Image 1 (cartoon, rainbow, N blue to C red):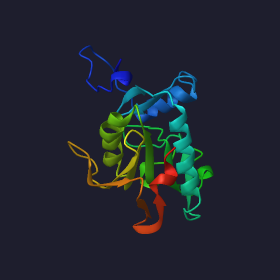
Image 2 (image 1 turned 45 degrees about the horizontal axis):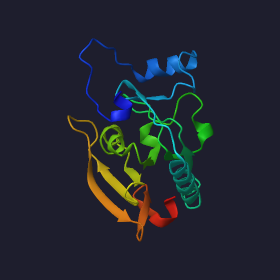
Image 3 (image 1 turned 90 degrees about the horizontal axis):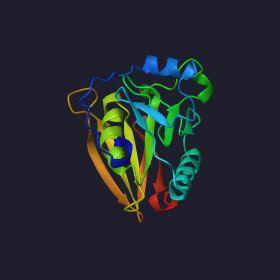
Length: 199
């Protein structure tokens, strides 16, 4: 099935895409619950992958590392939804402006997100392609992929925004011996050692 093979072909049979508003109404009405391991990406309900121990450990390490350095006008969340024009992904880690209590009516919009981090093992292709496209289209300024397969951090910056092929214009790879700069509002806040993030 698509979630397992990481293929993103559109089915040939007639299907229906969802808006973010429709997806939110389905969740509020109980049609979709926490037991439905899906997220909305580009209007499609996409199955979320099961998380293994290295993924869980890395997610916690990234969150703790970010929480130790982000300024008070930002907060760190894990595996909670953010809102874009056509998607409601649930990134492994996100740094958003304000406090979680500021978003009682809707999930944080992409324009209030400074950094997204996806922890990638079985999801590496999805994170490099589909997720990168979603985040670049929405204008998320910094997108990191903690690549557990190759033990490195892939950072992306300078999103293209909407267009035919949304992408990030800058990609930098840091191996486990390096430290990556954390940038929020165009200012370097800290440098995080990749080895400290890996499981």
